[in-house]
Image (cartoon, rainbow, N blue to C red):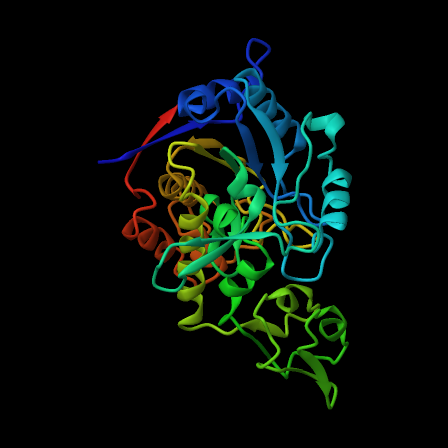
Length: 368
């Protein structure tokens, strides 16, 4: 058996603009089965860190919001606060960042409700009894919502190879406590020869886990929570992922958290992947590198595993763009995510998600 994944490219004309195509995509994917009269609908997305420009354009969210309202639902835009120190680490700054990035009510016609409260502590425990996670801590407003429309920007990711629907739901809906559980075990390491002792990582670490010893950064494993933000902030790339068993565990935890999020959303969840501006790293970065492939299209499905598999396949079928950061894996058919992060086996998350019953990797791709 295969799951249905629907797809539109970015071609448009005066007869049918891209927003009308998106409307047809939502119909084909079954949004009317997910959104019913008076249902409170959580539209889960990533608002983008300040300085990032690869996140999904707010005008696309407005079209999704309009569709939900036309079906009688009451939509709200949502995300959970970040674990690392940044511009989205509490609801006040998170909401300000979202508005500054264009997700104002006047643009998207829906309110912003941060799922895990003012300081990321408003969560609901969901019992799942899986390999790594027995009880998952999910932002309460995600659990309280009647339905979920998960809208993901598909891109590369330094810990999971790529970030799509599973990452958007599993990591993105977790409270700060839930994010801490998922990141624990992924500890970074310092390359002493690269470190210049600038101290940026010391000042940025909100957990006080980094200090300078003889002008070289040192990470205290007892204090480090493994959020990986120091990896992103280091101007010399002197702090790197400590690869090994921890990364497979990290991906499996994301999948298990996805299972927890969707536990009370049977038949009430729809997933969209925007495969454009395919940046090499997460939208949590305060900057966006050039995309690795051309803008491909938008996918929709009720299966989060199938839509991520289809999105990865579409990206890998493309030749790399001339000015991207890719040095290898540039030909059509090459694994772009393996080229970006050679030690990350991104397929592991999909295989594990299929194994625990989240969906199927086999899919039927229908172009709308």
